[in-house]
Length: 110
Image (cartoon, rainbow, N blue to C red; front, side, top):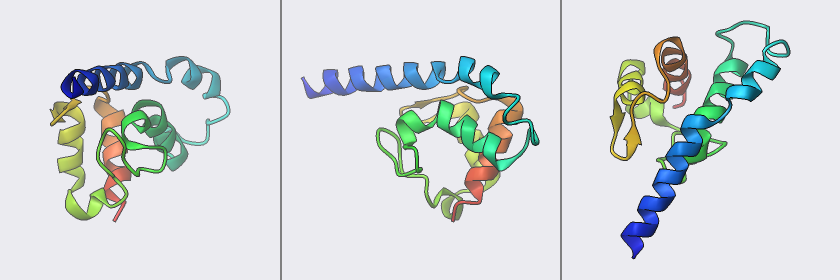
């Protein structure tokens, strides 16, 4: 019973994380037009795609706490986890420049 409930919660979380933020980004592009690599944009990408599992403040939840992830992993390691997945986290939720920017941003969290 517990395994089924956990699987249901994980599946729902992953679907919500994968679908999160597409339309909101289009509406906010003009408001966030400072720089495409700005910390605000990266934080917004994290919020839209990752926070449902890792928490609004990186504190964790379904996914692990990321408040000090940069002390444990390099930018390259973090980007590999983002693109390939690890454990219950599926790969490919972020790709290309988004994955690179979020990895760099998370690597600064020490």
